[in-house]
Picture 1 (cartoon, rainbow, N blue to C red):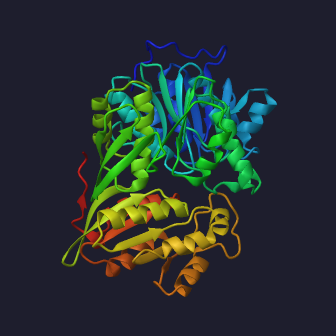
Picture 2 (cartoon, helix red, strand yellow):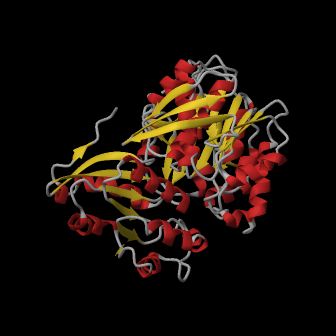
Picture 3 (cartoon, helix red, strand yellow):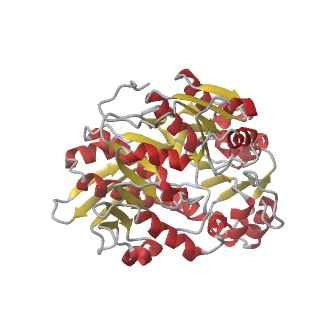
Length: 482
């Protein structure tokens, strides 16, 4: 645990001493809670069940309640909530009745950022990896940043850390437009894609305008770092009235990658920057999408004066993020083994990027995907894209949609997806009703040398460790920590 006393001036929120998080186990909440604990605030929180995340916070001094009850919030000075929390939640109702402030998580993050040099990473895809790469490179440069990330940084073993420098690096969440609370000094836009469209009333133009509004939260002397390869980012670029740096594979980009070579998990490339020497870079992640994430990091690190040596060291030493093409190990099968990978991708663009990365790094190996769609509304809105992308696997097993609190939508479930993919004639998907069915269903389908990916944002995330422990795969070899 980081010491509470730091050289940096810390936020003093007046009479606020006890901060209560409703849904403290959520990936967007726990990191902020951990930073506040390390700043010396009293932190409590509730969630529907205990987890390793809540146990970690409890070990740092947080008071954790299992279940949501009115009395949990009785002694709080402020409640922090995420967009996933129902306004009828008894803790929220109690706070409102007692005139205890109730603030969105992004507003609390903005309060932490207000006292620091904020670096906010926005975009539909790549936020977590880019934020994590930035934390790694800043640390290699001796800048010891505070970071709040939407996934567990492997090297740190956590998704948040309180640093001693003026820098705070965090993800900026567009899913509920809450990133508009943030006022960073540097902002990244990795890409803009159709997702969470209910927030934007189904209007893609409104989504684009909101990203521009977010960038205009930068001060006039701030910096917008934008991916020129993304057509929508390129489209909004002329509307951005702040200093900008662009990155990508495009020859027009200020910072660009050439000579990209992928060998399994490693990707090597050369970085060209205006008025700088070419930089040879390696990252332990496959795929062009991760080259773009690294370029965004290099753009910011270069602007902040981090040395090339530290940039190369921070990128090459990066050990990854949990559930972002995380290699769990090798499952034994007849004649050899299968590489088991866990991945968070839950949008067709993300699935396509992972498939392309596998084809590039392991061109001779079959790809077996166990996929769980996340939300009925996303499945409905992007149905044709899912059918096309998932059909590019060699073998596909589809779990039922993870509802994330939504009611089923007719025609937007996994059985229907199976039917539509089957009609294309490329492969015959297998429907899985329960995760417990996976091991006996998938084992006969596997061949030596296959790559097996468990992918999605729902409870599919628990399947890779279950497979490693399954008696059907006795002798599975766990990936060694780097």
